[in-house]
Length: 388
Image (cartoon, rainbow, N blue to C red; front, top):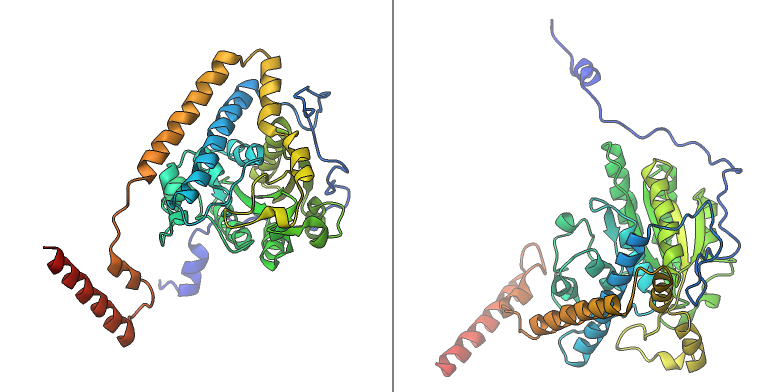
């Protein structure tokens, strides 16, 4: 009996497809809290417990503190490297440590991270070699680490494009029956870009397991939040796409980890994407090339300095008797060792082939490019002969 191609296709096993999306239930509770979720006062005092956002295990919070301390020291060292000419540019995330580290700790090792250019601290907290993290900011043509091995996409400079990438990857993982979650770091400015809305809409329609994590640090470079949106908060942007959302005090490490843990669990359970807005603040300029004094005053910066997430978590852990002077000193020493190792390795000049300048410009080099490459090759050869 001859089997037709159509019959063969019908008989072959098919990959599991996600269930057909249904319209969101208006009673499902898509709206965020009217005020950001907060579990710690600025002085580190624990607020009344909440059933919807239980306090994370104290061991996880102690590890969060350690990574935040190391992350802040890394951030300061990277900023110093720009002044020494070792980095072309560096976008600091000082003040956003709770968000940077909390996002990583809420994930499993086999989940995916989609970072912006500001997430260097998050990537080091994920365990990626800091020299690999800074390779792109040195002016190299690649991101420095293996995205597939690290389950971490290259740091994204164009605003919001990673929102679409994450939705596609997360949908692909779900399509193949895996419970992988993708967490997307974005800034407040990215929510004004079309790619943000396309990514969230696609993820909602196809129930892709994505957590969109907006670090609202009040400025898109120099543009204040008031010039970006008239919405009560950026968390409300998920409602229009049928995506449940929440807003959290981004300088409260306990609340950040609790909210993100719930958001990741929501996505992993096959319920689709979740949007989290963290209210935080960028203490340093947009990058080392920015003069932040032109668009914000010192009083504003000092007011946010009093909400330091690191000091808040340290006070809380001391109050729980799981952190003392000796432990603080030990972690600080670890951070200094980490920074010293980074400094030493970044001071070593990486080998560079000048002819690599002509690689990957065109799939097939043009005659002009070939001519220019040969001209450079001849000049290098002549310089070598002179030095001999």
